[in-house]
Amino acid sequence: MNLFASIGICLVPLLLFCVVFLLCVKKLSPLHLLFALLLGLIAIIPVTLVQYFLMKLPIFTAQNLLSVFVITFVFNGLIEESLKMTTEFFLPFKKMTFGSFVVCGFLIGCAFGTFENIVYLVSGAKNISLRFFTSLILHSCCSGLSAIYVWSFKNKEPKIFCFILAVLLHGLYNFFAGSEKFWWFSIITIIYAAVRLKFSFDRIYQSTEEIEDSSQENQ
Image (cartoon, rainbow, N blue to C red):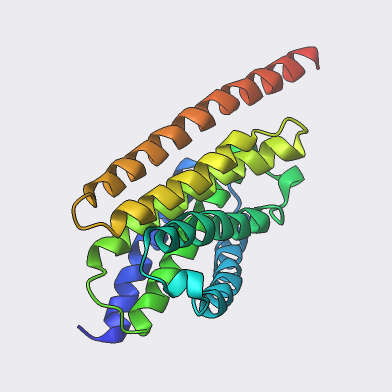
């Protein structure tokens, strides 16, 4: 398949998410959405640089369980999720609702995963068709969890477990995705990440709605 056509296919899920969220999410500004996509692109730059230099170290090149653990949980999990989470602090928190903030966090991960897939594609990586979809969903859900943490942190009630969970789930996904026998556990990880994001979002969203309702009644 033509390279440009393949890149176009990679962009389709991201564009679909953008359209759906713009149509369905109240008070989601198109400018905030575009800014989220830009942050997702920016986040991929330091990750690529870190990967380029760190992957040359002996701990990353050794073929043993310790090396796999470090790559999946330290690099893929901690470093990638920390860099994505950091970009979410640049979202205009005071001008956004909780729902639009988490959606933009989700889109940061979706944009990150899309651009990462394009990097793999351009670099000539093979047999990554399944990864185009699984890693995209994983990045999006983990970034959504981190967005919940950032929102709660700015409200001085940090839900740090959401970020820790994003790191652990990302590490588990990469660990199982690289296994020939247990790769299907990576699919379970993605499903759990999506369910956990929905659960965490609903719990905080209900509380924010109650606060807004009570403030309106007092007015």
